[in-house]
View 1 (cartoon, rainbow over the protein chains, first blue to last red):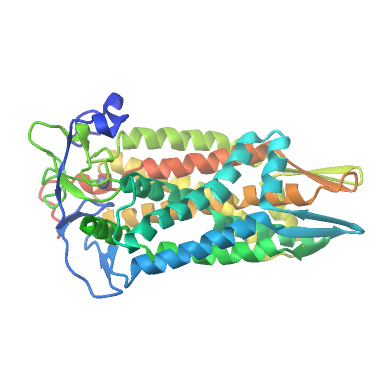
View 2 (spheres, helix red, strand yellow):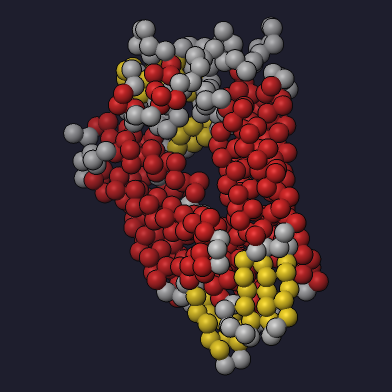
Length: 225
Length: 214
Ligand SMILES: [Zn+2]
Ligand SMILES: [Zn+2]
């Protein structure tokens, strides 16, 4: 498959500081990330969406008060998420026995059963990635609200984007619901405080992601300092 | 030079994969030595070795798909009796209990989505390698869907996590995770990396002589 690009050299990819040069940027141009169609940036109405005319990909959105709203949702999400992790998700009453479990109980149990990889994956997708993702949103949005540029914002925004697919709390929630149905046959299931906090965290995080347009963030950052 | 006269590639421009800023290389620098001036990410006009990497990850995922479905995912001990469940027997269990919605969720997330995702990626890879000009937009949309649905396959792994944590009543009842949990996690992770390493711009890169689009 030749695309007219020189062969990739892994040695050059290690450290961006050591790359040959910085490219010359064109702010008014947009290349569709999915089909590479080159187009000129055009203003769109508030709450509008700009789509690629060739492949329909959403190129950018114009969200009113994007940063403020993302900040509020991310903060709520982080608080609820911490509560969700700290308190029991579910309780199981089986005769006179009562077992309560948090998310960390499950991760620890998988680890002790010898499934270290699965345990690490659940830890990554249900705790590390969501917390870091929301934390980075706050790290970028709080200083930006006051017109300041956060330290190493380039790295923060790159990490934010690459972490996004690995934050799977909404999938975890579906898993919790399925296990509730499965266990309801053999014992009494008691939803815990953690479960409600998790449900709230998911709504807040999804809302934060929906109102945060990274293009707006980069444009705001260009005006800072 | 390949590509349609409307793409960044043809205008000798590169869009940053991380922040989407469009850049031009200074004279004398080739594409792969450049960093984005805004976010510092290395610039590449197309994802590196996209087709080869995606094939490798797809094949690895197919290999793990078999033990993931044939080996037990949970091992349930109740009062001395041991029952081992595979993903499919879990689905059958829910059907027998009349829990159709749950059976459907598990079937779609654990069996159907991974297969669908792998089939779509294989079809896309073959179409790109054959430089097909058919249904470009539809194939791009198909890729977009594939990228979005993969995460939902993790449902069964999370169900196992909750069961293992909660059903820990000593001799009365106990659930252990089976080896399929590890293989299945590997399938999900590999297909997610496979989808991420495929470059949908390759679908649009080759145009037959005289063919024009917009
Ligand atoms: Zn497009
Ligand atoms: Zn960039």
